[in-house]
Amino acid sequence: MEILDGKKAAQAIKDKLKIDVAQLAAEGKKIPHLAAILVGNNGASETYVAAKVKSCEEVGFKSTLIRFEADISPVKLLEKVQELNNDPDVDGILVQLPLPKHIKESDVINALDPDKDVDGFHPVNVGKMVQGLPAFVPATPHGIMLLLEHYKVETKGKHAVVVGRSNIVGRPMSILLSQNSNPGNCTVTVCHSRTHNLKELCLQADMIVAALGKPEFVTADMVKEGAVVIDVGITRIEDTNKKSGFRLKGDVQYETVAPKCSWITPVPGGVGPMTIAALLRNTFTSCAQKN
Ligand code: NDP
Image 1 (cartoon, rainbow, N blue to C red):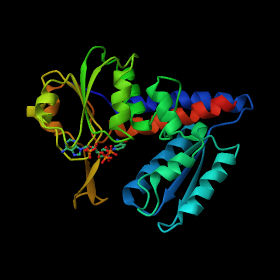
Image 2: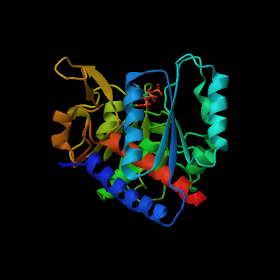
Image 3: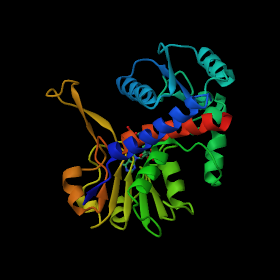
Image 4: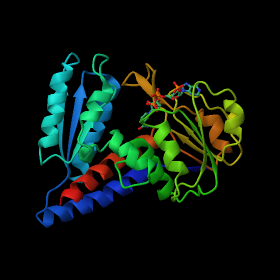
């Protein structure tokens, strides 16, 4: 069993970006600028946004964090999005999800300039991705593709089972893995909460991408010997022994599943860092298009 170390792979991407940004600066060109919007004070969202901003600093990007109270009106939020759309200095706009219930997430996503939608959630980017055209691809599935590429994991002709069909992870993941690309060229089965024979399908999988948000859902009896297992899940489990008061659990029961795998991602340190690396790559691309 080998580990798909997201920390290492993400660091390699960040090191390269750092060099590329330094070169832009040396040439007197614009450096990438990511604007992140955080609404309310959800603990997990705070952590994710802070990690994204910190990573921007690490590679030499400019970043702006815009915070709003949880009760901000949808109109005010949309005005801010418009302002960032019109700001030539901003290359990427990130709206941390989930948003409070009174704000319709699709309204905010649809208001983003697709050319600055570095999370790849805007329908224009989704449509382009589906057609295999250049597009901003959602950061988590993009990060997983970069991780498979980094470790040269063979995916061609493999049966991939993606558990979860959300717009931000499962659905785009299934599309990317099925595309005529490397990594890619998989035969893909998408599973969800109404799938009847999930265990049997997982047992047929050469690769499982678990993205359902149920801690330790995938157990050893669901995994074929030699499978590649990508664990996207992050759930906070209360743990009084930790300073933070919680620990992170993936959707895969790591201890029992890992010995059966050819490759597996740990949680933390697998998909999470790659999501941030992919977001940085998208922001760099956006800036490069302007330069
Ligand atoms: P969603 O809740 O939006 O989607 C979950 C999906 O899993 C749905 O399609 C749902 O099916 C399916 N599902 C739920 N229960 C089952 C079940 N028992 N059997 C089969 N399918 C099931 O979650 P996200 O896609 O946003 O996130 C998934 C996980 O990934 C979460 O733990 C999240 O925290 C994590 N995550 C991690 C990231 C990272 O950087 N590592 C980034 C983004 C997310 P249905 O459609 O029928 O409801």
